Image (cartoon, rainbow, N blue to C red; front, side, top):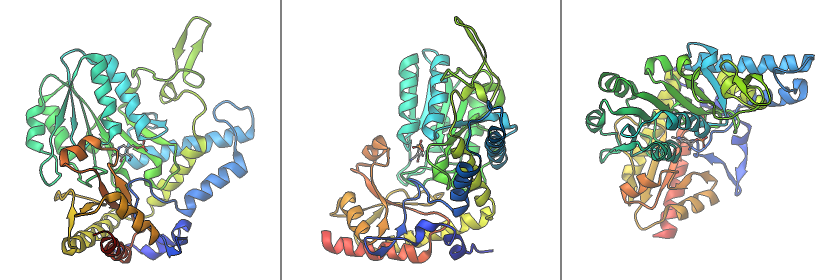
Length: 407
Ligand code: PMP
C-alpha cells in the first residue's frame, strides 16, 4: 500500500512553515530529519509531567522518569533487534558511539594489526580509526570505491586477512547515498579475518527502516536520534553483550560504578558501565517516541516511497543541462548529490534557500572522498518519508533559476 504522504506531513508542524516567503521544501534530511508531533509531545510531556533524575530518586517523579527512560531502551532494543536491552548504550550520537568503540580498540590493537575503512567514510568513522591506528601502531587500510560510487567489493575481500583486527564501514554513504551490502561483506570478514570485529555506521541507514543487528551479524552498530525523527544530542551504540561487558570504560563518574573508595573503584554492570553521569533522559524518551511513530509506517512502503523520490530526481537530473549526479551506485537510497557545470555548490545552496528549498552543500564531512572525486564539494538533496514528488519538481524549478542566474 502506498504511503499517505499528506497524512504524514500533517504530523510534522515545521513542514507547514514558509522560508523567505516560500513554502518550505526541506531536502536536508541526511543532515537531520524533522520531528513528528508525537516526538515533540513526548518531550513536552516528560518536562511537564515527570521531569526528574533517573535511577537515584526516592520519590515518585524519579520512578516515573526512570520508567520512561528505561522503556525507551526497550523500544530501541526491539527496533534494532538487540538480543537484550543491556546491549543498548545511550550516547550523544553516532560520533560518540564510534568514539567509544575506537578508544577501546586503540587499547586492544597491536602494532602490525590492520583496520579497514572505506573511501566513502564520514569523518566520524574515519578520523576515529585513523587516530586509534596511530596510537596503537596499527595500519589503516582504505577500501576503494568504484567510479559509480559503489564500494569495490572485490578489493574489500582482497584487503581482508588474518591481520585484520577491525572493520568499520557505513551502511549508507551520507555523501553519495550508496547502500553497502554490509551483510554479505561481513560474511567475507567472518570467513577471512576470524578475529576481526565489525562496526556499522548506521547514521544514514537506520531511518530507512528494517535494520536488525542480528541479521547484519556486525559487532557494533552506531546511530543518531536526530537523523531518525528524534531529538539532537542522543544516540545509540549497540554492541554484542559479551564485548560491551568487558569494553574499556571511556567515561568515569556517577552511575557507572559498583563500589568506590578513595583509592579505587569497580565498574557497574551493563548498560550503565558505559553511561557515566546524568544521561540525556528526555532525549532517550523523545527518541523512543520517534521510533514508535516510525513503527506505525510500513517499512516496504517507506522504502518504495523514498525510491520513487530518488528515481524522480535522477530522471529530472539526467535531463538537466550541466548537472552531473555524484554517486550512481545501483544500490542507492535517499541522497541526490550533484554538481552543475560552471557553478559552485555553495551558490546553488544560497539561491535555492531564497526559494524556500533547503539542501546541503559542501564536503559533507567527507573531505578525503571529495578529494578522491576531484570535487570541492557537492550540492546534496536528501529525502525522507514526508517528501513529495512535487517537492522534487520544486527542487528542479529552483535549480533552473539558479543555473540561469549563475551560468
Ligand atoms: N556517519 C554518517 C554516515 C553521518 O551521515 C553522520 C552525520 N552526518 C555521522 C556519522 C555523524 O553523526 P552525528 O553528527 O549525529 O554524530
